[in-house]
Structures are given as structure tokens and as C-alpha cells.
Length: 266
Ligand SMILES: C[S@@+](CC[C@H](N)C(=O)[O-])C[C@H]1O[C@@H](n2cnc3c(N)ncnc32)[C@H](O)[C@@H]1O
Image 1 (cartoon, rainbow, N blue to C red):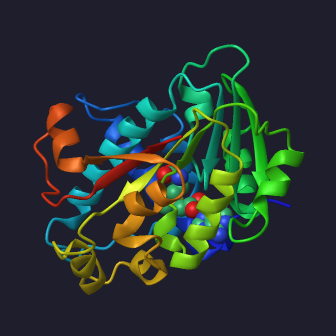
Image 2 (spheres, protein in one colour; image 1 turned 180 degrees about the vertical axis):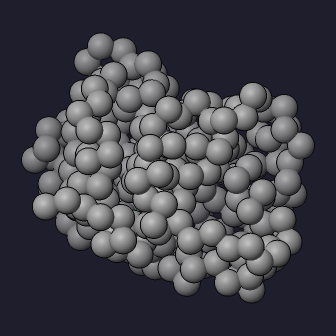
């Protein structure tokens, strides 16, 4: 049955919003990456994008830059890995748009409706690696389904949870990362967003005040304890700020908080 974007679960619709921001970035002459699929996803999903003309205090630009920087950062994170797991892949097109060494396997996990919508829009496009879809709810026992789909826990893996943990309760995020830890051979890496000072800069509160629908879905994930959590579970964490990365990529940082990313290595 056709997967209409209006029928996606609310959290699945957020993937369309991110694709729209990647399409925007891809059109810039000074783009930090090029995603030739993002435009098709945002056109197909435009019924759920729901733009607003209300003033938002510049938040749209801040979130657009966050997505641009994070996409580029996570592109660099997964590059070169031979086994990649995208936890909550959404409309991520890295399997198609990045160059991969022969034999690379990339697993895409997300809710069944999201993966179905994605397949319809991709319309038979050919990935540049072996791409394996695993429809799951990441609050359930997804590890067994990943292994069933061919994941090899003996191979060092790059795990990416981009734009996911904030939609999970603390206990759900911790359970997910415990499973990642269990399935990680030495040499594996994991990465996701991290705001070391929580919402001290008030960015998320401002987003709530201007009434972004997506903010009602935020549950907080691991919160500011992510690096400590990783250390306690045998990972070596390293943190990065959007501010420093934007500057490194030649952009004037719009998000002046310490928000950014963590990479854990085993
Ligand atoms: C903001 S989007 C990010 C998608 C993609 N990683 C990206 O950055 O473009 C959030 C994604 O998390 C997925 N997601 C949220 N909760 C989930 C759950 N419990 N199980 C599976 N996927 C989930 C949604 O379906 C959606 O695709």
C-alpha cells in the first residue's frame, strides 16, 4: 500500500523536515554537502511540512545551520567504515550519495512507515554500498532483528544516531545505547548530538515558545550526561561543538551555545 506522508507517525514526519533543510543547504553555492535526494523527499512530503510566517526570532536559520553542520560532521564520521548502522535513518541518503569501499554494508533502521515512504520516493535508485533496511521500533528488541538482517557483531561498526535520542525518554535512550554497546566489536564508534549544558542557552525553550509542533515530541534522551554515560559503559568519548565546527567549515556560527556532538570509541 502507498505510504502517504500525512499517514506517517508524528515522529516520522520530523524526517521530512530534516530532508527539507538538507535540500535548502544543497542549493547553496557554499554548501557543506550535496544531497541530491533531499529535494525529492521534501517535495513528496510537503503536505506535512506546514510552514509558518510567524516571526521565530531567527530560529529557522539556527536550525538550518545545525542540520547543515551536523550532516557534514556525520558524513565525515561514517566515511571509511565497512559496517555502518543508521539508527533512525529517516530520509538519510548517505547510502546513495557517499562513496563507499567495495563490501561496505549499511543498515538503515527506522519505523516501517518511514522506510516505506522513503522507498517509494527513491523509486529504485541504486545505493553505492550494500544497503539493508530493518523496519523496527527502536524502543523494542531491535538488536535481534538487526542480527537477523545480517549484521556482524564481530566487525567494527560506525553507529550513527542522528536526530534520534531527543525523541526518546532517558531510559529508552540508555537501553538503546546498551544494545549498541553489546553489539560493538573493539574499534567500533558511536556518534549522536550532545548539548553539554542542557538548555542553558534557552534555544529549546525559545523553540517551544514559538510553537514548533516538533517540540511537543521532544523527550530529552540522555540529556547532558552522554559523555559520562559512554565512559561508564566502556567507550572513550570526544565532544565537538557546532560553533567550532561551523567556523572550521567557513560559516559564521548562528548557534552560539555549546551544543554539538559526541563520538564514542571502543
Ligand atoms: C529528526 S528525524 C532524523 C532522521 C535522520 N537520522 C536524519 O537526520 O535525517 C528522526 C527520526 O527518528 C525516527 N524515530 C523516532 N523514534 C523512533 C523509534 N522509536 N523507532 C524507530 N525510529 C524512530 C523517526 O521515524 C525519524 O525518522
